[in-house]
Length: 282
Ligand SMILES: NC(=O)c1ccc[n+]([C@@H]2O[C@H](COP(=O)([O-])OP(=O)(O)OC[C@H]3O[C@@H](n4cnc5c(N)ncnc54)[C@H](O)[C@@H]3O)[C@@H](O)[C@H]2O)c1
Image 1 (cartoon, protein in one colour):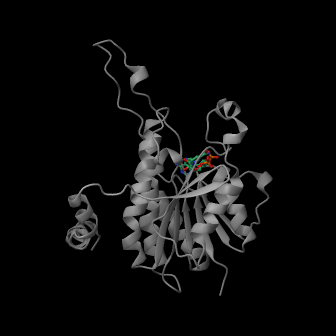
Image 2 (image 1 turned 120 degrees about the vertical axis):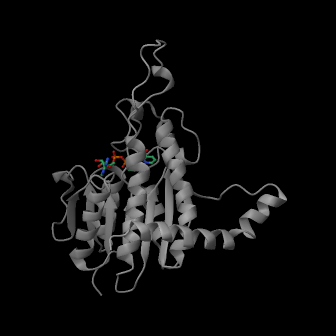
Image 3 (image 1 turned 180 degrees about the horizontal axis):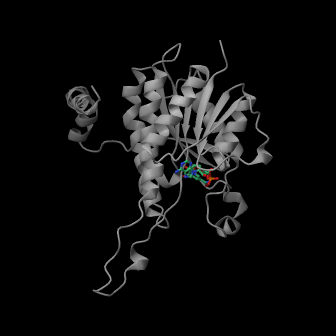
């Protein structure tokens, strides 16, 4: 068997670059997708890495990325859907208090990259994983602790990351039927290029999460023997906490979770496949 192939978005910096180097040490070939090239200082082996300049918020760019990634070694075993940005807008601090100056259409790039980019990546991975010599594969989405707790400083970011937690849990059962696992990590504060200047310096060292904890989370979610699916792992300082959804409270909510699941899924399966088929090129 040839070496497994991983595709990592946001691979040129921070978590994505550290994961690239980690997987190279484990004998993977790595497709690195990013809007920026990786730094020369990373000294990546050219035979085992393929950089594809990609804006993950573009469907066409990701479609081309996945096509190139699969063509490289005719397999795609793992995707880390990791690219992310923080907020590019403000609501309440920017109210003009002037009737003649209503707000302009906001910059929604945070949703485009952090949420749409991950959905596009999942859809494309499902397609190519089905073409693998042994169909199937693994996806790990980089959500955030801001997907578990509100983060008022960056509401678009927090909303998009909450959405990724819901997306992970909602996709996992359907993915399992195709031998695909979908899990996410929810890192606390990790020293990378994400935070704006000044923020990291203000952070007490004892609350900073080292990259080694993040890589341990990836290792656990990618472990062939553990077969984890639908897990959301909070990575904070040295700890990994497997977070579970809230318990249903009333009897009706308990029934909704268990008794309704099957006909709910079946009804939507037919309806939503109809939408996809109507959209497909003849
Ligand atoms: N650093 C943290 O404290 C922290 C905490 C929780 C979650 N995260 C998440 O981790 C992920 C990785 O971020 P990081 O901390 O390594 O930051 P980073 O800024 O160091 O790396 C992010 C990478 O994504 C790339 N990128 C940005 N927009 C892109 C786009 N449209 N298409 C393709 N690539 C794009 C950037 O060029 C960069 O290389 C993000 O999803 C982030 O939200 C980070």
